[in-house]
Length: 181
Image (cartoon, rainbow, N blue to C red; front, side, top):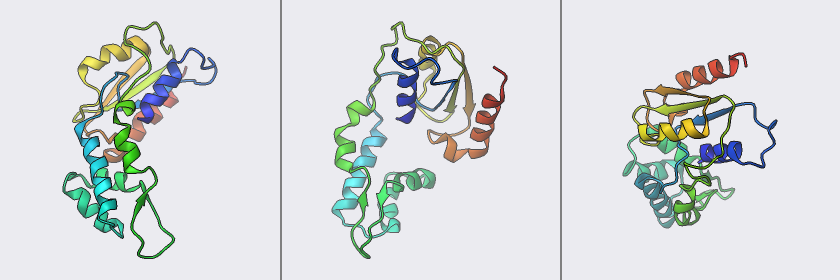
């Protein structure tokens, strides 16, 4: 979702031309569309954790295990838990699950149509996970339209590229940022 925000900022006609030197996008495309069913499942599970009044991260992780086998994804989702100052109090989330669930359509939106005239003509690094479905091959043409100076790097990961291959991700970013421009 942050990637869509960054792309929208880069493409927005009122963004000052000197604000961004380049852009890095991690495994999300500039295409409108509903978020995946797995995100809806995450929101439902967060609601369930609150309804169950789970008291610690281990208990919440056990609930997430029922729908998400990948420990790195679960750990990321658990970063949304807000620590209570009251020992033994039920867990809460920084971003309430109801807000997430009610915002699924908006979260998948993108403010520009694929045939619009807007473009970001500066270097853009697009990093995608080869096992992820968030940047399909069909989206590459849209990337080329909006970001004509893009370079695609594909790592052997799912959607959580930086968490699943931190070394490969970091190396790709360092190489991109080190290029003479």
